[in-house]
Image 1 (cartoon, rainbow over the protein chains, first blue to last red):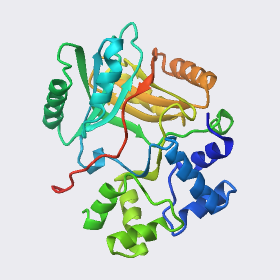
Image 2: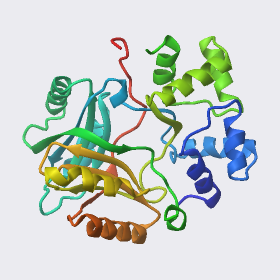
Image 3: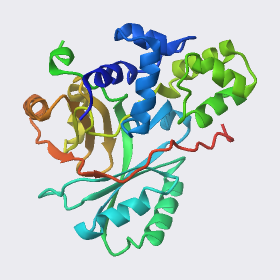
Image 4: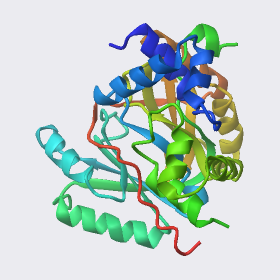
Length: 163
Length: 152
């Protein structure tokens, strides 16, 4: 599990790096940490894989990628790692997860595809299904419609968030 | 309208953002512009809602406990229910999808107890059952997303 000081740092920085000349010093001020420590800790967190990537987080929709499909399959549990690993490598896939099946929801493998329009997304999905041999599994495509809320995750304690 | 600088910032800095005292200055040097140019271009991208932030992407469940939740809500109540759900600070994505399960949102809580309490509260406020879909495994190596911005 993650160190308390790293956690504190991530809580601040994941709200967004300030757009100013010395942003890590600014983050440091917020969590009472010297700038050098902020940079060192972030570098280490990246090396450890606790930061997957650090950079600009784009809003696909606003940039013309209006079609977003969540595609789900019911695949045998013993194949899921191999299939998921394969799906996760396609450039148009933006997420690929295993989640538990539920009584009203028999699917266990999820991926997200972003494209400029539905036709493009469906073509990409076809390519994916062919390349990964997914055609024999039950599948559903759920295109997104209205976006009610989108922002980065806020990792905080109950005491703080219930303010 | 997106300038060349906007496009470079959008596509080339989704990963490996400089971890140095003057990251925007480093980017400016790499792109042959000034730090002030980079700062104002990023502010514009932010103001126009093209980026949500500059920051780390943290794999799920390393800090806090998260889950995807689905609900089946009659169309005429969807906006009201969605607004109630979005009002919780623990909710970070909340989308309508074309399906019987038409409302999909992601919650992140400090721990399992907090997550349970939050789901109970949401079910009570909305009076619809929440189908809980926590992540079991993550197969995606996130290297950012190559945007084709040529037609904009």
